[in-house]
Each structure stands twice: as C-alpha cells, then as structure tokens.
Image (cartoon, rainbow, N blue to C red; front, side, top):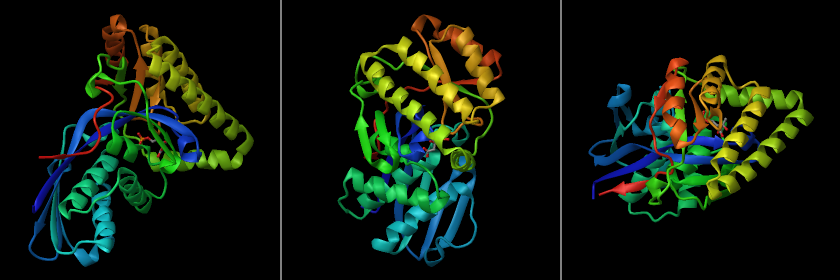
Length: 329
Ligand code: PMV
C-alpha cells in the first residue's frame, strides 16, 4: 500500500509535571481529541507537507531535511522523516495532517503528530516495531527538536488511556482504572479550563531547571513531595476516590506555585473552581498559561464550568482515557 493513515490522541497531565523531567513519575491521561496523519509515497525527491489547520503547505528536498530554520509545527514532522530515512526509506513522501482540535490548547499536538507520523511510516514500509521501540524513536525526535522534555506526551499519544510514566519512558504503566472511552462505565470527573494564553514549555522547563540548579536541596525536596502525591493519586484514581484526588491536586498545585510556574490567570481559574465546589484543582502541563484541571462531583460540574467562564477561561470538553495510536483502515 502506498498510503497509510494513523491517528493519535492528545494528552492532559494529571499530576507530576516538571518533576517528571527530573527522574520522577507523573500521571498522564490521553484525551479523545485526535490527530490524523496520512503518509503517501510520491514521485521525486521531496517531502511535501500539508497541515491546513495551521496554514502549512511546504515542500523540501529530502537531502535538505534538518537544515534551515523552519516553523515549530513543521520541525517535528521534518525531524521524524529525517530520522526514519536515515535507517530506512528513500523517495518522495507526502504528509498530510488533520486536527480534531486546535493546537493552541496545549493538548500535545507536536507529540501526537510525531507519534502518528512515525507509526504510519513504519506501517508504510511494513517494518515491525514494538511500542517501546516506537516510543524511543519518537522521544529521540522530541530531544532533537527541543532538547528537553520527559517524553510523557509521546507515551500518552502512543499508549493512550491513563498512564503512570517515568522520565524517558523508564516506566510506562497503564492505571488499573478504566474510563468510559476505554469501555468502562465511569468517566474521569475532570473539568478542563483554558486560560487563553499560550505557554512555552521548553522555556518553563529550563526555568525550573535553573531554580533547581540554584536551590538543589529545596527543589529536590519539592520533587519528592510531588512523587508522594503522584503515588497516592494513582491509588485514589484506581479506587475512584475523587474527593481525595481533588485534595492531592490542591497539594500538587501548592508545590507548582513554589516552583513559580503558575500564573495569575491559572490561579484565577483554579480559585473560581474551588469556590464553585470542586474537590480540587491545579494547572496541567508546563504552566504559565494553557490549561488547568479541576476534579468535581457530577452535581457540581455545571457550576464549576460556569465559574471557569466567569473567571475569563474557556471550558474544553474532552473525555480522558482515549485509546492510543492506531492505523485507520
Ligand atoms: O506544557 P505541556 O502540556 O507539554 O506539559 C509539560 C510537562 C513538563 O513536565 C513540564 C515537561 C515534560 O516534558 O514533562
């Protein structure tokens, strides 16, 4: 077959951001908003990329991949193809991407596109590859492009569901808890609020790294506190004990504030959710903007959503625990 389509879910960090960059665990959920990537062999010696959602239509000679500055959206695609071609294919290639949701929300579009593209390329060339090998391939692309990152977003796009993940994929484990989207009866009772502000993850990751360099004892202690929160949160999520999960979110948020990655806008939405009766709330991801999450009872959900809007945010309706990367037939 000359043409293959793959789809991958987006992600939402539940617990453990930043410490996961420094050899600690995190909990991440795949979201049911998917990215689609189609690859097709074409004549010639060019890579042609069409990403209409972000206004990209580009062509580049295959032997020039990785040279010249290109937009961030394109860099992940280009570096995935470059890395793949080093070991395998040659000949022209067309890549077309489609989003179910805007990349502005911080649902991990770069990771999702990287995983979808890599999965489709290996399928196109009929090369058998295990999930862990595919993870390692994609994680290397992320490091090639942005130099930093734990790889948690790659794992969510690849494996889906809700995962406990340790830096660089040293541990990738599905939680026992199964959500509605993965065919159980129960949805994760989480509300997502978007601040309207785009966060720059690598900058924030480097900023935290710098604070750690200056205050290693204090920051390592905070990271250990986050790890305890992550370990407890896994147990509470597995039991469906949402009130406790909420309290753990509040505790995680306090540490994130000490790490100086929250923002006025995030704090405002979090505060509004708590006032509206959410069990707990925290930022999700690198901080500085993007999204926050709150855990709430079903009775309070509407009020919590309304509070997010009144505080200047946007409610993003996603289901958590979506299935991982798959080839679309
Ligand atoms: O900003 P996001 O949603 O990509 O999340 C970043 C999470 C960090 O832990 C800060 C970075 C990472 O790679 O784990």
